[in-house]
Image (tube, rainbow, N blue to C red; front, top):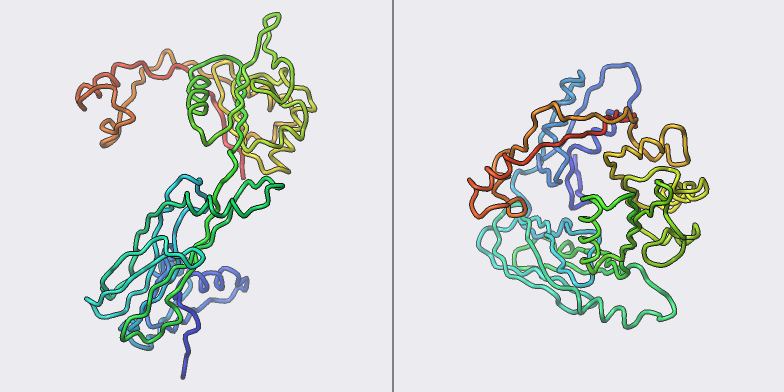
Length: 368
């Protein structure tokens, strides 16, 4: 029986699992797998698949074929890198390479953009699956690409394509699998975030200071005013500190953070805008509840925002009678962002003396 390989990737698990899962017959299932045992996909596990089949009563039989010696070849299988980056960032990731060559042979890996080499490094063969890290700046590339874009159009993203090239070396069986492609999306327009809160609590001040200092975000911070003892959002508009006056203006944001505010600060129409913003515009929506427990009022009675909450509210719970303290697990107390003192021992003492939480929102996760 002659079998020809048609793909650089050998996945012994995914296809078999799908075939078994899709079988709805009541008969006993038997899986026969003809393989040379080579598996080069991260994530999917043939061993885990076999264990699951055993637990499900599916009989599995393997038939070995071919050679267990990897082909004398260098092949770019795939690249792993962030899908989105900022223009001033460095693009980091790794090239997944099949290295079946005898150990000790030098070879190069380079990354090109429109024929120009942007990264290159020398390696030595090791006869195993390789993960080769890369790291290079993209600022000049982005600037050059933006220079040829139409000035009449405002672009939110800039797609870039890079070629991964491994020049063939002597002794390779194939040289048509020594290239790959890396695609990334450069975020060229500042993401806009709308933060709404009812009072200048600690969480609000932290977010405001964080976002206003981060040049990558364009933040509109809206804090409620008070009139006759009740919070109000004040005049609507398109300026800083104002809730958007129209649905279209609201849709220009990429993220809304809703703090401890009651439904009464919005009109029914504005709550519908927020729902549409999530449902139809794909906008991000984060809720940060507070001790006033106002977010529960969006769910009971029913409002246009009710379905956006993934939990059912049961009211607040005062924890003043419970002895609670912050306690680090493992080496957490030695992490730089959590250091309140110069040494670890003093730092733990300070954290242990801090009062624990005194309030919690009691909720139940909804199905789905």
